[in-house]
Image (cartoon, rainbow, N blue to C red):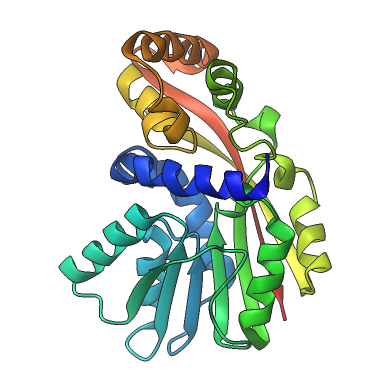
Length: 271
């Protein structure tokens, strides 16, 4: 997919998904976010950049970690995600966190501006993740660190058929390289190529639990990366797509619920 088109697909797709994102993904993504924050070892007073922040699930936890002396800036390519995160910050009276719409491959910050950069499950959506990692390296201060999480290997993620299922209906090429950073040591290699040192990583297996058919389909279609393409479906096509997706995860069904396997890779490095 042409990079500019891929960016538009991500921008407007996540605008569509924003309202459903936390409902269907907050609990399921927490293991990756927990490990990312554990590896980042945020300290009071640090200035943190959270790239591809979504609704701020990691940003707010980072703000709690750096306390009143620190500051967190969250960026995302989606206007709606930024609007929602900003609204949550206002409602919960977070004064040391701010959000801005920004392309992760073109960060609008000066060199050496942050102590820590976080990127939780955002690199897979970027046309050029290496360029994004180099930008994150640029804005880190010497000795600063990055912690990044991506989805793992395709054959370790039981929901992976969603992309092919959607693509054959709208020829959208949604996230054509989604799983390529999940191969063993691939994220480490990208970090090294981008200039980071003392790189370490962990791979963790998890279970994505959905209580009903509706929850499983809501996460896969309305609240995730295929939301833009899904919104082009008429009601009949949506029903057909739902049935095909549920069939693809039927082996993980337990009575009315689903326990779908997933895998995350979390890595960190230093400037």
